[in-house]
Image 1: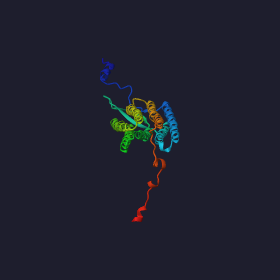
Image 2: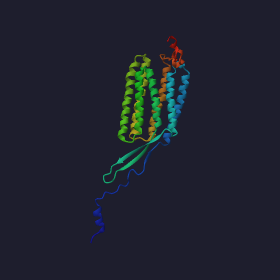
Image 3: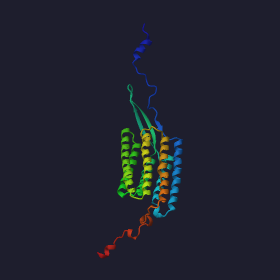
Image 4: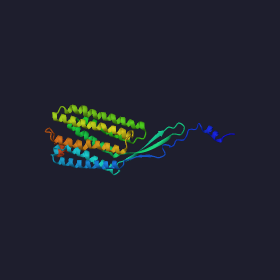
Length: 297
C-alpha cells in the first residue's frame, strides 16, 4: 500500500523553503528624532549669541580694524540661518537609496531607504568656509592668486559633497566624494604650505598664531569628510549622531575659532589697519568721469 505522506516527502524534499521574511516590503526611513532636533536648536542659539557678540566686538574697534570682525560675524550669521532652517524642517530633503538583495532560488528583492539629507548645511558651508579661508589667508598675508585658488577649491569641495549626498547609486556617490577630497587637498596645500611660508615672513607672534589656528582648522576640517563617510556615505551612524557630530564640529570651527581669532588678533600690536575704500568709501579719485578729456580734443 502506498503511503501518501511518504510520497509527498519524496517529491518535496528538494524544494527550498520560503524565507521567513522577504526584504524590501516596507521602506526604511532614517530620520532625526527629538534628540537631533533639540541639538539643532541648541546650535542655532549658540550661533545667534556668537553673532551678536562678534558684531558688538566689531563696533568697539575703529572701522579700519574691523575686517576680521566682519568676516567672522558673517560666518556665524550664515550658520545661524542654516541651523534655524534645519531646526524648523525647511532645510532638509530625503535621498532615496535602493539596495539590491540577490537570491539564489528566488527573484531579487530590494530594500528602499529614505535618509534625511540636510541640504541647508551645504548652503551654509558654501558661504562660511570661504569666509573662514579669507580670515586665515588675510592673517597669513597670502597673495590674491593663492586666495582665489583656495576659495574655488573649497567651493568645489562643498558642491561635490552635496552631489554625493543626493546621489542614488553607490559608485557615482564615492566618485563625487573622491573629487571633494582632491579639492580639499588643494585647500590644505594653500594653507599649510603657502600660507605657512608667507606667515613666517611676518613677526614671530603672527607666525606662531597662524600655525596654531590654521592647524586647529585643518584638523577640524579633516574630521568632516570622515563623518560624511560614515553618515551620508555608508549610513553606519543614524541621523541623530550625524547631527550631533556636525554640531560639535561647527561650534568648534565657527564660534570657538572666531573668539580665538578676534581676541588674539585684537591683542597683537602688529594687527593691520585698512584705510582707503574699506574705511572711507570712494573718493574723488575713485569715481568714474566721462567727458573730462573732451576739452583737449
